[in-house]
Structures are given as structure tokens and as C-alpha cells.
Length: 274
Image 1: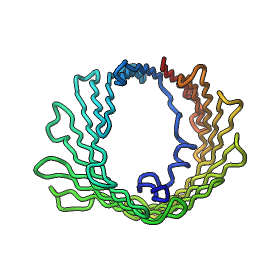
Image 2 (image 1 turned 30 degrees about the horizontal axis):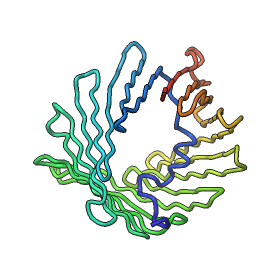
Image 3 (image 1 turned 30 degrees about the vertical axis):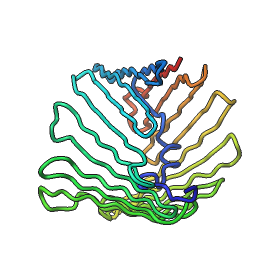
Image 4 (image 1 turned 60 degrees about the vertical axis):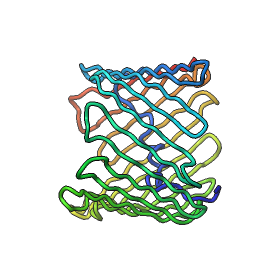
């Protein structure tokens, strides 16, 4: 099973994490607590401009079942039930949101030593159908995904990609937006403390190109600094400090050189796990 390729959404994941993960330009607070029974309680608050959003979630992990229940500040209740080992090499996830009766969804994932298959269907009279698959190994994988809307009998998406991974670098090429754009990503681990990466997007509809370059540097075992620069004139930086085990404080900033009359964006995220 160790040679199984990653699911299709994970193609190019290393570049996405390097260039986008932890760049939060709002104020976010997360508190995680564990009960004696192993149930995890998480309280999250997000201040975005003048609006505040919050939610409380519980996560229970059994031997073959994971139950995730979340209640947000808009009185919506989201539930996700994951059943592992439903059959050999397969798991199923049922999710729904109250009061949205059309939000029910069933996901099934099957993992083979040289292939992964993911399918999703909405639990309503006119469901959305999604299916993705990858073949290969952890080193080289090729995959694609399609989405179908049964209400309009039309394709909502079709994408394809290929990835190549080695311990010191990862490269991916993705055909996205129904074949209207091409995304190329590359991440290189220079040494145990430093990684660099780049993303190039070519849009065929208007023949426009865009790129982003970034880096990640571990100052010490507890502090990480990330930077990124895009061709649209935006420069960003993240400083993350693990000030106690699994408790993080993250400071993000972004400057837009084309918006000379606007202040730089600044965000602060605090995650506590006693």
C-alpha cells in the first residue's frame, strides 16, 4: 500500500502548501481540547473586516469510525461520518448540513497499490456527481477528474494532471478549468531547513501568463519563515512560531505594489492545544 499514488486533489499539493498555506490576512483563534475519552473539542473564531464568524466542533475517533460534528455562529449544524474498512482498501464518508436539506453527500474512496478512485454523489433528487482517479505510484502518477450536474445534464468540470515526486523535489502539470488553463508547479528541497517553489499558469482564453515564486525557511526547530512574490506585484510573508507543543502563533503580511493607496494586509492566527 505504500506505493499507492496520492488522490487526484493532492497532485501539486506541495506547491499549494508552500505558496498558500498559512497566508491568513484576518484574525483567527483556535482552541483544541481533548477529553478523557479521546473526543476532540475545537472552538474557532474568525474576525474578517467587521464581521465575526465562529464555530464549535467535536471529533470522535473510533476503531473504524470518525464522527465530526460542527455548529457555527449561523446556527448551521454540519455532520461528517467516516467509515473506514467498509470493504478492503475502501472507506466511505457521509456528510450533511442542517437546515440545508440538499447538502447531503456520499463520498467513497478506494485505494489500490497502483491506483486510487474517489467518487462523490449528492443525496438529493438531482445530485452533482464527481469522480476522480489516479494511477501510478508515489513517484509518478497520472490522474483526472470529472463533474456532472444531473439537473442540467452538463459537465461542471474536467481536469487532468501528472506529477513526479522525489525526496528532494516535486513537479506537477495540471490541465484545469475545462481545458482553458495549464498550471505547472515545482518545489525543491534545498536542504533540511530550506525549500523553494514556483507556480506558472497559462490561460488559453486570453493568452495571459501568471507566476508565483516562494520559499520556506526553518530558522530553528520551532520557527518557520515563508515568503512569496507574484508577477501581479504582490509580496507576502509568514512567520510561524510553535511556542509550545502543537500551539502555534502565525503572523502574515502582504503588500500590493499596485495598490499604493492601500495599507498592507496583516493577519494574526493563534492556535492553542493544551
